[in-house]
Amino acid sequence: MNFYSYLWLREDGSPYYVGKGKGNRAFRGRRNGGHLPHPIKDRVVIFPMLNEAEAFESEMALIELFGRKDNGTGILRNLTDGGEGTAGFCEPKTTTHRERIKVALTGKPKSLEHRTALRLANLGKASQFKGMKHSEESRKAMSIGHMGHLPWNKGLTTGPLPIETRLKMSISHSGKPSGAKGTKRSEDVLLKMKETGIKAMHTRWHTKRGGVNPNCKHCGVSRAA
Image: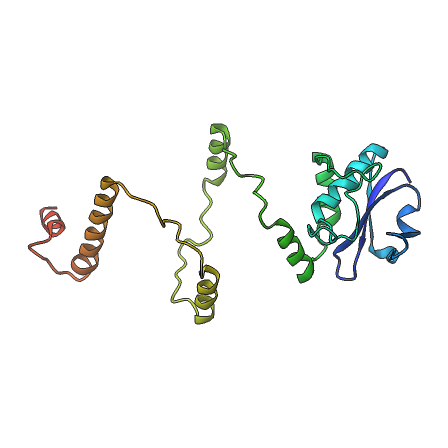
């Protein structure tokens, strides 16, 4: 077997060690000074690579992806960031390597502890899409791709939310400042909001109930129409 990177998995399917090797390296020996025994054969995931350099890159990418327990970034028992000479930096992942990781991990369920560890490891990190804007061609392609597709919630109506759901929403928003807090609206915006509110009241109390108020300018428009 050529060079490869590998994962050792816990019983719940979450990885606890990442390594790089050749031959039977992934299935023998102990790690971290003998304190980390290797798992049974069924819980070893292999990522074949073309050469040693690519295997080192893959090892570093996987450690970066899952994070280390010793520095509080994730769930792995690794004590370094991987790479030749246990370098402390992480090289960028290639598209090919991303696809290999995706294929190897697809269908493997993640435990609650695994999902929680991943979430905590990513807290505070900016989204990879932050600041990105779609090009005009991309927006047109997305528009064409959605033509003829009905929204998943079209025609669905929902009643009052269950008390448990409302309580969870209340707790999740507790202590968080409003998105509009401290924002000053222009006179034009305030005027439009006022006009929208007046028209909504007209629809609710006059149009839907069949009444006419001579002091309501919208009722006058409705009669003229």
